[in-house]
Length: 384
Ligand SMILES: *Cc1c(COP(=O)(O)O)cnc(C)c1O
Image (tube, rainbow, N blue to C red):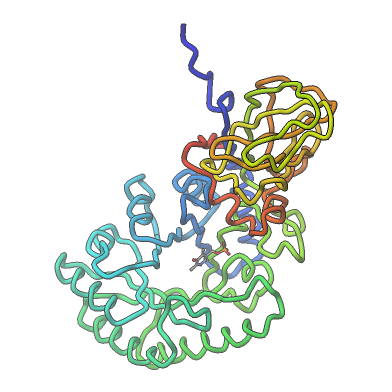
């Protein structure tokens, strides 16, 4: 007897990834920044949606560039056959500079040590490295400090003249673009403009100057420059949920996380539920077991709080989220083992959204989708 699931949708749990929605989101975002090139940010396994299928779909929808954090992610895109421009930005000393130069990946340099390493790698393989320089406009994370910028740009120009590198871009990242009107936004744009002028003074002539993430793309036209770099909005999640939901930006959530009930049973009143008995049935009732837990990315902070659509209604996680499972109380309602429980999705079939989960857990929807674990198969619809 072959009792393998017919397909992943019949399995314990799956994440449906709607590539038609992703392509439409790319189109909507490109329309917001018509004068700018488009970099689809697919780091962290495409925010949990699957890096390679999302990168392909974004390319089909006209993304000029792909953006990832680590060089390993960039190399994985190449290994999967994705050509065209790819930028990565999170390096540590001794990273795979040479492999990236040989794979024609644009690499980001924020400091002298990184410039020295990429120049050495370019010389070692006899190629010209494509380098983008990053300024810390105020985020306080990576990027060169403004005080170190003139010297970094001069050193980069010298390496360019020597044929080791070509400076293809100058860029920065906002600290508070998700809070429209925040005073840091104009300040950081000012620092970025000064950095661009200093790069020009050093003799650099980059192809692309860029600073706009999703909130910049959607709410700050003056931040678009030559290229926009949206991530979360491409997956249909609003980067400014306090202001507007995805539909108001013409975006549609791409991921639906669903599971099949593993148990439905009647229990008496005063029955403790899950570790620690933080939920106790108020009377005789029906409990349904949803077979996903924190190993699958369901936050333990959703204990007693996370919403889930089961048997036609929103339920709340009863008691603690465990590693592999959690329970919901169906009250007087009926359900069967195998029925679908929808944790989140676009929201238009009555299910909660990733934003609802973020609110319930005190986090952001970025984290809700990105943390969905490798045990959950991704099932793609709309693949071409
Ligand atoms: C993650 C990231 C982005 C995309 O940010 P969103 O807020 O998801 O649009 C853009 N640029 C850099 C440098 C990033 O790290």
